[in-house]
Length: 325
Image: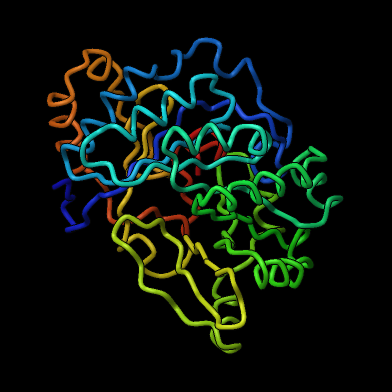
């Protein structure tokens, strides 16, 4: 079992398959993806290399793989990537985080390939606010994709970054939607990165205030699965959907960490806000998942106790697209 020096076990791999994104979210890539940033970088991991990575992690007890980006649907071979992960012994769940731009047209193929969990970013249910946040007038299309995923039986979660000046006023609209829609809607505290200091200062909302409101109005905390993400999920008898809160600035947030990250170029990140990734590309390219597993096991011993976001430390994370949040 993959375990660090603090006794935390890692059942969950977040694997970026591209750092390219086609949205211009104001809290992440307000100027859009800059092609020049990656000209000198290696190509993203191939399907065969992803297979090696997933087999290595599975041999260490990892049970869940989530493909992230950037935007994963920009990979033309995403279906093959899903199939590759699904067919690795020991992997129980394969998920994708997407901005939903291509969801309506591609979810059927993803589901046939074996996808069983989907996270979709929806930062507002108001079309004008959605466009202002993301740079795209695509809310209706994204919602159609979510409806189709639910029809297909794909477990669906919706991510919404809390933004004081841009979507907090739409909180009631989100609640009305969850009342009749069987999704888990997770509100995420805005995290400070290398590129968003001023934006963070004016838009950060503490999730604990929403948590207090949920508990006061009859929502109940659900048990957390061992391969679950960091959200605290709540249920209410009057709502079909659930509410989740991801609060990286809360006390002891890192104590329950169960996930590791790998960049699209094959660097292992022990934390989203680590100072740098550990380059494993050559070991991945060799195709020997046992040797790779040994390197991963050794590297995990160096994982720190916490991310130190509360001290303003952002590590090497310039923006969330570079590693998938």
